[in-house]
Length: 68
Image 1 (tube, helix red, strand yellow):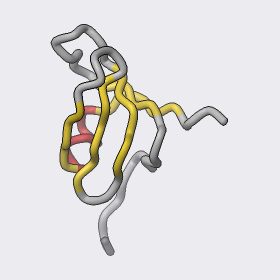
Image 2 (spheres, one colour; image 1 turned 90 degrees about the vertical axis):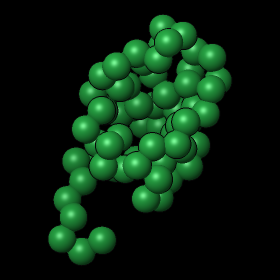
Image 3 (cartoon, one colour; image 1 turned 180 degrees about the vertical axis):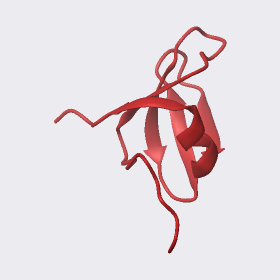
Image 4 (tube, one colour; image 1 turned 180 degrees about the horizontal axis):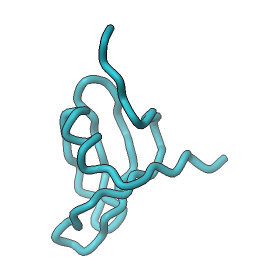
């Protein structure tokens, strides 16, 4: 998108730490799909969530790149 600035560059299999914890107690998620809507999988209970990129930017604390 021209004119948009994103703080984080999300790629598949990156681990994202969010501000709020999931009800299972985990605050880490794995990116399983990218685009305008991001698809995340909880590291605690394996629940899958879809969230808009702008909302994810606001909720993100850190991003760890995938490990080879």
